[in-house]
Length: 348
Image 1 (cartoon, rainbow, N blue to C red):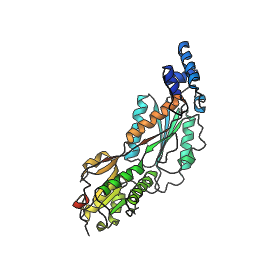
Image 2: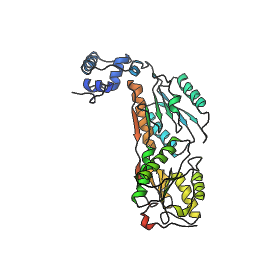
Image 3: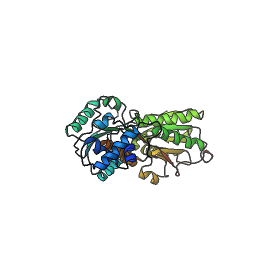
Image 4: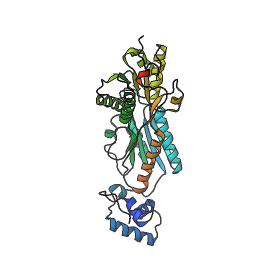
């Protein structure tokens, strides 16, 4: 006999399992859209009574017609993470025969007055009657933006600052922690962090992970905060500001910043892993071909996009509010890191 999770409120999926029908069939039973055989209706009714299932507000608000379209609002300059996330969204949407309508806001480093542009984009999605909305943002404040959202229109946020439900994101804190722990386990004690842009959630969370790992090991955190974006230029600038004799380990907030930092250090006569070890975040395809190949914390942004669309589409079909999905980082070890015994500080 199918049962709901222990202690959990029975869901539409639980009804479907007990009645041995799909969630879409249960949805048709409640909305009256589409044919459901009398025999099947009887099985669903019996399952509802046995489980004590009560449709939630979202299920009661299911619309009786759909446009097979989803609005996507993405904020910030395109980079590896955002483009891969959109690619994953596109793959999953095509598989479901759903069209994506995309609004892109190119928000600068200061991230000032973006709320009005975002609000206009969301109102546009409502006006064209999309079936659901995805808001992908690296900016703090998305909770305020959607605080009065009409729950009858499904919405999921892609953001580091995840709410209890209706959200998806990567775990940048874990990426910062894992990268720093890798360096500590190799024997490094003088480890600096080359931070990402300070107005972005991911950068703040990666720095927090670095600080937590350093403090847990009794080490002093040292952060270079020169970045205005996620580019190699920001990493190169940090390399010009860093003292090559003051560290043996480096955690860079992303792979691009790591590339710029290594280039700047090499110009100054210091090269990884001979003189320092360095770890990035993302595992962009080019990272395996850096000189040396870059050790990094891999984040599967494409899988994030696919999972987010799947969550939203399920909510559109069933009325069940999505929970949250987190993409965990994976350490990919390459030649840019080595044990501290093989590392010598370089004075310029």
